[in-house]
Image (cartoon, rainbow, N blue to C red):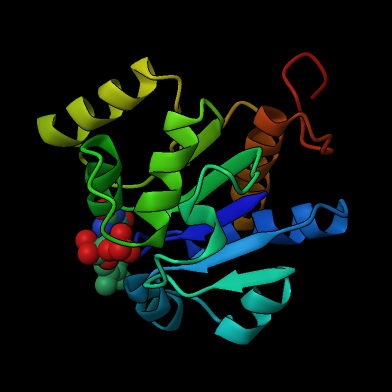
Length: 182
Ligand SMILES: Cc1cc2nc3c(=O)[nH]c(=O)nc-3n(C[C@H](O)[C@H](O)[C@H](O)COP(=O)(O)O)c2cc1C
């Protein structure tokens, strides 16, 4: 599974997702954008090295010769979390300017699973049109929007639930509180 972290807000969600997938024994490949490296420093308490160590393989975001650039390299699922509006725009327009956009481009052309945890607020018409275009191609648009029906008590509760709902998309079990069983 390929995970990409871009320079939108919500680095903790990416780390929590990586931790969960790692604990589930899933082979993880990881790309971190240049801006994400800045945002990790600005808004999280994580060292980049801790995040990298959760993955089995790392790629340089500028290395367009790396394996995920080619459809012949088999990746069943790619998740971009958080996904910036810039990366969303690049993907929606087939502008494969870096390894994240190129790998996503490959996922779409090969009809493979691509999930985007898009993060911005409010969304402009440009953002929404880009999302609609990709949703129509089968890309899963999964913004990290919290749920409140289970009466969360902390930010950690909210983050755990958001990540649990993303794991649902991947068919991976988690112990989040579910409607009908609260
Ligand atoms: C602290 C911080 C938070 C940001 N949050 C967002 C965000 O939530 N959504 C977004 O689209 N861009 C956000 N940006 C702007 C992106 O980082 C910027 O558009 C960048 O070019 C994205 O590049 P990338 O997609 O290659 O990582 C943020 C920037 C900073 C410094």
